[in-house]
Length: 108
Image 1 (cartoon, rainbow, N blue to C red):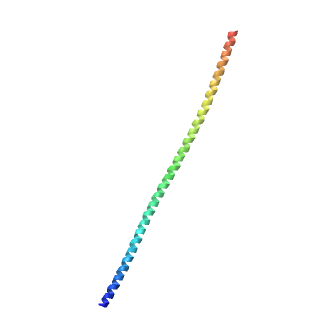
Image 2: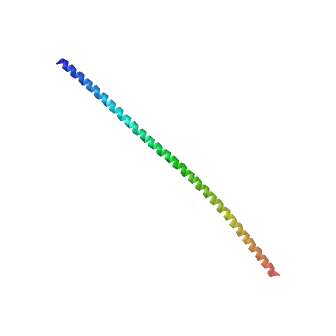
Image 3: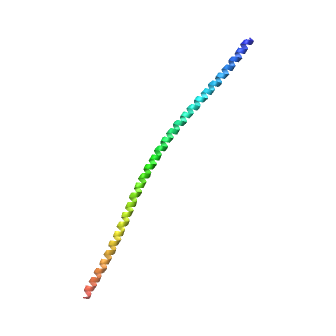
């Protein structure tokens, strides 16, 4: 009976040890699974960041191009305004000269 009791105690210890080892293995597998998930999430996030950086660069290029076109239009509008002002001044001067000639002709 004593031998059997010792054997039972030994088997209980082995069982406890086996369960502990099994729990440790499960914990390691869960940790590895968690790490794999984290790596996948990090890769997906990096892909999204890369795509967003590309989109941002493309948008910046489009904005720069749009600003360049806007500056060109502004320069053209300013030049046309100056030309219009010059033409109006020339017309006023011509009108004044015509009136002087008319007055001079009337005086004669």
